[in-house]
Structures are given as structure tokens and as C-alpha cells.
Length: 206
Image (cartoon, rainbow, N blue to C red):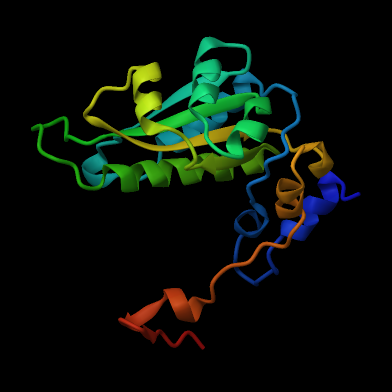
């Protein structure tokens, strides 16, 4: 049986001089402990996200947060799809990130709103990790149901749903496929595939 600590170690990326450990250690578990996240820690997490960069300092992101046992948490659970319905309801915090698609100053379209939401969401995952809290972002949910149940205005684009809490033992997951994913090593594409001097031409970083 792989413990939570062992799974965490398996997920660590190889160390690289000059790269902050938080980037190499952060990962997205699905096994969540039932322990609640304190309001003080949630405040720290969202305060960090508040300072994310955004186009024209628009700060288009909004986070609809559901705490387990509350109506918003129940509504978010109702929108989940696939395997997410099996593990995510146990997370003490579920949230939906949305982005205002119009600039407040003149009402024109903000083509960078979802990009900026992604930046704020990334900061949430990193600040949470620094506090010993894990996160898992999901695309497997019904956006139409999310908009309806959470009464999200049409001029807000829906990004992802995120689970947030404390890591539990992988074997607490009911599905073997989920357990296998929890205990597999993390992999990433090589830099030569994602960093280019021209299209299809890797940048020489040696």
C-alpha cells in the first residue's frame, strides 16, 4: 500500500538548480482528507491570488467557493461529471473560477479574461501548496448546470472547478484507476517540444 507521503515523494519532479522547489513539488491529488481548511488559510490563499497579474489590471477573476456541508458545495458537486463525481465531493472546499469577459472601463471585449483567471488560479495552487494544502483543477463538469445552479451572469466565462483540501491515502479512493494515477510518477513534455525559436524549431538552451 502506498502512503500519502510516499505518493507525494513519487510526484516530485527531479530537482534542478535555480528552480524553486514549490514548482517541482506541487501536484494534483484526488484523495482528499475530510479535515477542514481554516478560514485563515483560505484568506491567505485568496489574498495571494488577488495580486495576480492581469491585462490592464482588470482583475476579471471571481471565485465561487463552496465549503463542505453548505449549499454552494452541494450545487458544485451536482455539476461534476465522470470520475470527478467519485472523489471530489470529499474535498472540504470546492470552487468555480469565472472571468468577466468585458472591460469595466468601457464594456469592450476582454480577450485575455480567461488567461488572467488561469494566472490567478495558478497562484492559488502554489499558495495552497506552501501551506500544506493540495488542489486539483477539473474540466469534467457541466458548464451549463454550473451557470444555472450558481446563477453566473452570461458575461462571465467559466474556467475550471477546483477541489482544495488536505491529501489523504491513495487507497481511500474507490476506483483502482484513480489509485494508479495517484501513485504514478509525474511526467512532462521536454523543453525542446514547448520552447521554440521558430515554429517547430526548438530553442537552444544549452
